[in-house]
Amino acid sequence: MLKSFLKLTAFVWIAKALKPRWRGLLLLFGSILAILAAHNEYLSYVVITQDHAYLMASYWLKYAVVLLALLIYLIFQEAPLRRLKAVAEGNDNMLRNLDTKKAADGFDFLREKKQLKTHGEQLLDNSEASRISRA
Image 1 (cartoon, helix red, strand yellow):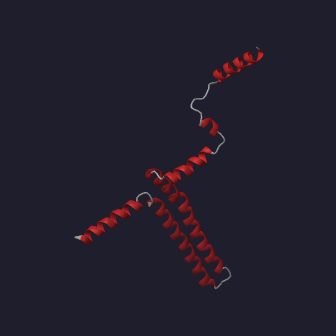
Image 2: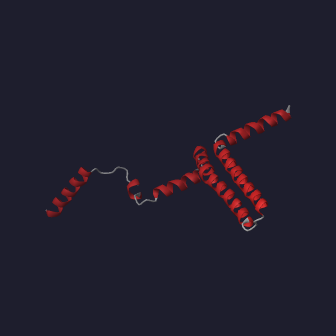
Image 3: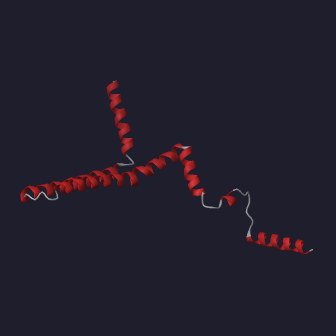
């Protein structure tokens, strides 16, 4: 009974974790398989031709492209999910950091005012101030 409950719990947890990521993971695994297939084709070419000149470079290139694919996945898939999770959970620190980045645009003095004046009110205030200074 406990074993089946643990299996069900693990399945539900994995399904919840993979649901927002399945497209990105599928694309990542597909690209890694394509990279490995291309490298295997190059290795069979090297065996046939006995030309080992670029063999080390091919391994470096394969690993660099795999790491690049992983980095692209992390930037475009995991970072937005982390940001959405923080907003959904109400993570105050991350929200404050996002707010300060948006608020650091030089208009803080306007955000602190309770009510802003319209253009007409500003003109009237200026004309009243000029009448008082003339008198």
